[in-house]
Image (tube, rainbow, N blue to C red; front, side):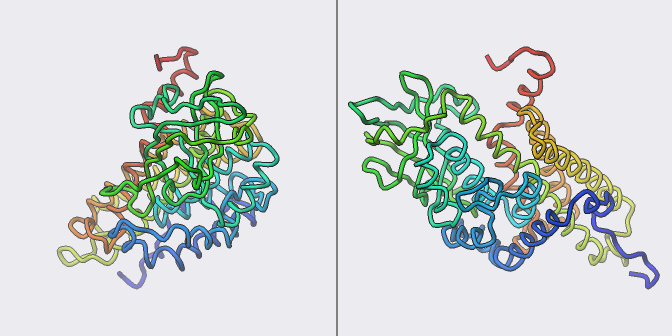
Length: 394
């Protein structure tokens, strides 16, 4: 580069994002970034290539800096605001979507379900252990035939005296085969209800789903409940109907609004650095107009997504966010993130398909992030219903 060339500016610095954050939010963000630099990035390519991640050990390390259930109050949880949680998700997913999924499922699905809908006894039993990484949780809602339509689940819970007996299967369950406790949603004569299921209960089994091309640094499993007998106290007392698990999903989707941008930012920063050092026809790839046009467009979309995420974070911290607003963020930011990852790959060309760079790994992961916890089509219909007052789901 010429000696008098201006110092490159980081993409989000063009939007002066730090000026929109307070000192504690910046400190939390930077602490998570350092954790990922030290404990995730040196290993993530190998974990992804092997399709294996030391999730239990990693959970304890993540708990050590207060990330598990960090946005919950009490029970050993850090009690941070929602925006700080979002920023943590962004940094985790900048390392890998699978690592953010580990934290998100633990805190925003399994722990949140117990925190929001559980009895005090259930909270005291499980939340401190989960916050400390001593117990791993999973969230059993999705079934093979019922993903976007969870209201059709076939898993049944039937009363036998004072007990409940559960039968059914769940699939695509993050953390399932390493979990100590599963929050399982089942159909009863009283509608859909949630149950806290210790995974050492007789009749419960979980098998890891292999041969994935996405989220390879994440444990994904199928759960089988074969006459799993539980005491009456296993039911989540405040969870009635489909609204309860959907509330948990909205909580987790909020983390994706931020997290997906972390993957996009990592792709973009990697690509800018690559373009500045790659020589093509005797000058840097970054010096070509077409390259700069791509980088400018991607930066614009990343920044707009970040401003949307921060706005939603402030609404959530004020207690004013609505589920359809979370859908706006999830729909936009996952679309933006995967588009950026794919465009970055074109600049890296053949180098972009190797594990030496994170770009195609992020793109593959984002294929899952784009569709889990609500496909783009589902979020379009949620937004459409908000706009028209008409449901197009049935």
